[in-house]
Length: 300
Image (cartoon, rainbow, N blue to C red; front, side):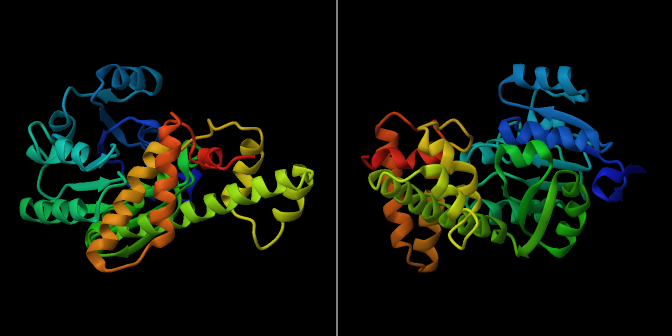
């Protein structure tokens, strides 16, 4: 039994496979290792897996299937639906070697469709599957303070929750398979609207020749404040856009939300418009900049 006093809980030590060592994945995998679990990592770029093991310990595997062999739990955190399909269902994907009763926790921000597909495919193979996209960005992942929105059966969620506590401060079981991804879409829709409002507010303050520090002091304590206002206003004012979550990824996420809305009949006029604004930012060559670069399309 590994005692996780730092997180206020105890969970049996598990044999874990972690697939995808991007900005989020490498931090989450580290927290699992620090919590006392045995961690084997896989990354498409082998050098990243080797570097992670050299820095933190554990071991690396040459394929997702090899990493997952005999694992109690497999975690995935990759780019998009095609990547997720590749590391689970195709070729040397983890579903080929996962044992009956094993757990898949997917932290990819992906479509609800593939989340439901993995849940069905997993059930047919005797696996438990949770779609568990996260919010909190790189800083939240590094600090172990992510918020996780989960979809899946009660049994799957109960199996995943103790493991996820190693790197999160809030875990919510939203509903059935796909519901976690849909909740993440709500998150991104709200972020898009908030960021556009902050961008317009900043440009208004600049046009009015206001002291931007004083505006921040006044607004950040009021009803218009938000996480993005507090954490991005000053960087946006300085035209610095290297804070974290990229414009390209925001466009991917808004695309998922807009596709899902077409399926469920929801109307997203503001999200659709802001998605096009982000397309303009991409056309400026700023696709890898932080999503707060949205302000660049509004002239000073």
